[in-house]
Length: 323
Image 1 (cartoon, rainbow, N blue to C red):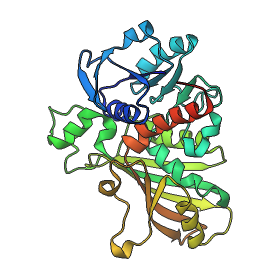
Image 2 (tube, rainbow, N blue to C red):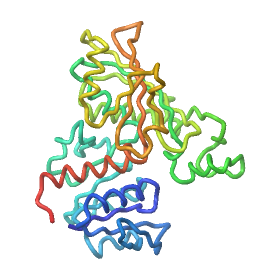
Image 3 (cartoon, rainbow, N blue to C red):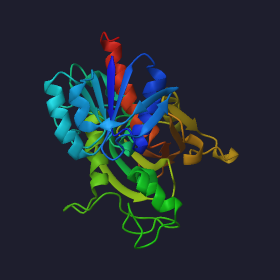
């Protein structure tokens, strides 16, 4: 079985390479990129050279995992699919197309079917969808989300803007300095006034969860390296108790719960970083309505991107016959 990873030198690409090399040691791994061609990298004691993306047609893989931008996805995925390659795409290019499954495997892995293109959701969408899916039996109908997103969500240059304390004139990822600051905008403003990141949360959660759900979202960038956070308020049609909500959250294998704040046990980026789990805590009753507040945290590079993409691949492999 041959697996190609396009965008192998980016933050998410590097993470995915390490996961696939570790989890699927017998697979033949092919690494591609544009700005890192010729770079030699090592994963699980094997040496690889990053090749030009255009060379992917010279040695067709069984699966191509795209950790690149929309332009790369648009240019390469359709012709690869015509040649029989199954493609998993981390960009937003295919996510909202009605014939393309948008998948968080523990939520809606059954929607993959025989699709040759599977979209990986946005990072904040993944962690919130996992949390909300635990509570579907209570019939959620409205959700308000405020995100606190790490700089790594903007790629390597986003990290450098923070770590190097870049100021005006030297910024690469952000319009304003992020060090010692909070930017109340992630993505770009659309005609509606919402940002592109906020619309991703609204549209992608509805598609993944497949329930009637009103979603209001506001996204901000905070001076954290890795680990997206989200305040989530959910309104339910059914009556509930807090012990019931906590029990539902604890049953999900991809969730770590933090229910004892008086012991300073809290979901935080530094506690969940490097983990495939979604951390959930500060679960309290909304005293104004039939709903709850909760704080949801996940490693945006791993849980919010590379590991979810790997789980999509794993789900497909479990259904097929590959060597």
